Length: 303
Image (cartoon, rainbow, N blue to C red; front, side, top):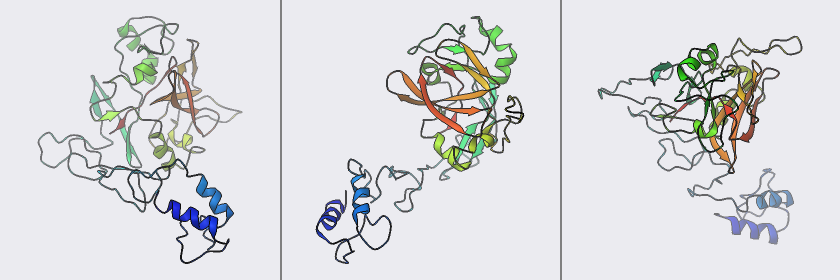
């Protein structure tokens, strides 16, 4: 709130021209005048805070953690931390022999629950480049819950895990998780996690924004055509988003070859949660919320 009262006093008591004796911290259009438009912009910040007291409002500050290795008031950057070999913003999660040489680099495979997942570096993040496969149990699509974990394999309507894992849909698309299953501890390897709603933003920003990032994230095969044009993407990011469909809130398997949906770890209220969507008919990355009863794919993100 620094300078807030001072600035408010200046706006209310001075003429519409700048006065050198008062700090024009709300001269948003940089025209040398603290005018009505600047005052309206200032009002929009009531209720905002500056938790780290760096002079940048929290709503605009990308890093509030003083312990971040790249903490800086200006310019503000997304928080980064030292990895296990001391690299700020590095991806190393293991150095078992403590020789200062990373035992894992982003782009290497990471073993988890008997399977080696491919990984890819996109901007300052390290992602799984394939869907999670963790399948402790399996259910037919009609069974489900918005409070207990449920696991599904597209088009499989039985309950035998071994049989489900032998299907081509499991091999290609992995597992569909209701939201309670998606946030189950152990779904991702140690040092990895299901991304929050906000952690998808650096991904799409790095790829040019939500209106074009979908093309860079979609796989080069498997997507339905749309109006005579291929729905496949360029996969220039290496994310390899495949159109594995989902189990909708009515308990039906749907949208294979049409949509790819990924849960975030962020709930919206008591019964909904945020997710991202890739589509066959555009290059967008959609953001929406849906019932936690629904089942979507999951990708892991390095801590």
